[in-house]
Amino acid sequence: MELFLLIIFCYISGSIPFGLILTKKFHGKDVRKIGSGNIGATNVLRTGNKYLAALTLLLDVLKGYVPILISQNYFSEFVQLACVITFLGHVFPIWLKFNGGKGVATYLGIITALSFQLFFLFIFTWIIVSLIFKYSSLSSIFSSLTVLVINFLRELFVDSGLVSDSAHVTDSKVLFIFFILIIFTHKKNISNLKNKIETKIKL
Image 1 (cartoon, one colour):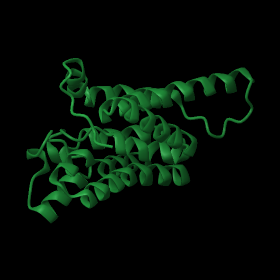
Image 2 (cartoon, rainbow, N blue to C red):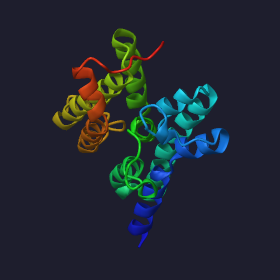
Image 3 (cartoon, rainbow, N blue to C red):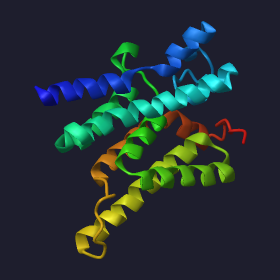
């Protein structure tokens, strides 16, 4: 029963469409009919309200962070499952006919709960890639790949005995699932990048 309740809690937490709720509340608009049609902070920014976009980003990060923090404290044996279910809740919310956001902000909240080192690695990589190429989608994909690769290498070092500190090592299988899902949610962006029609970000 506890596992079932945890799954429901993580899914519902991850599935809350803050971008949609906030734009309807403060703009009377459906963010799905604006720009890319995505419910995330980047598309909320296209409404012209930077504060609303920032609030959406913060809430999407928190809805990834809070369920994992609770799982770590009370259901430590199910943390990895909680991570995946929370992420799936954002990407496939039942309230929006399983058509959710791209998951990057929620992913960031999840890895923050798992490891501050991975959080800073993602942010650092995202900033560097975005400064060079100026594509948010490419920055997100490359940053999630970097997190996966670095964590996997650290996992290997711990397993081989080269590194003794395993406190900040995350299960790479979970990070691999995240990476595949982020690729999936960015498939349109990847197509746009190939066709050189992807919108650049203004830094």
